[in-house]
Length: 188
Image 1: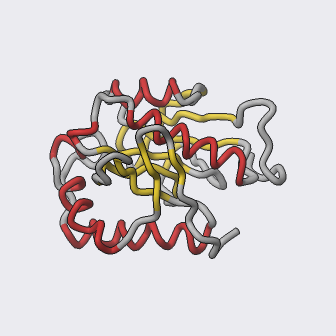
Image 2: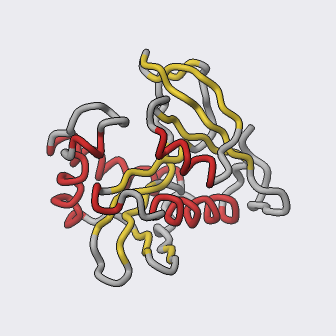
C-alpha cells in the first residue's frame, strides 16, 4: 500500500484530494487562525511549522499508505481544511499504538456547515474499505463540544479520559462498522 497514489474522494459538496505545495498559503492561513487552533494547540502555527505539516502529510501517504487530504469546495475549488489519518506517536496516557489517529480541521468559514462530518465520513469509508484497520481513534480537547458532536456522528463511541503531552484529552475510539471489511484484519 505505501507509495500508492493518494486517492481522490468526492461527496456532494466536497473533494478530498492530495496536498500540493501551492496549498501552503491556504494552510498558513488555516493554522495561524486563533479560532481554528484554539482546541488543537492553543496557539497559531508559524509558517515553518505549517511547512513541516505539509511535508508530514505527504510522508504519511508515502510511507504508511494513509494520511490527510485537503478538503475543497467542489463548486468553487476553495481550500476548506484538512481531514484524514496519521500516526504521530504522541505521548498519550493511556498509550495507543498501531491505530490510525483520525483528525479534522476546518477554516472558520467552513465551521458549522456539516463539512467536517461529510468529509470525515468519506475518509472513514475509505479507511474501512481500503485498509486492514478494524479501529481508529481521535483525540479531542474535553472542552471542544463541536468536535465531540462530529465524533459521535461519525461513530466514535468508546471514550477514555487521558492526557496528550501532559494535557487533559479525550480519546474516542471507532470500530469498523459490522459488515465492512478491509483486505485483512490488522490493528487491535
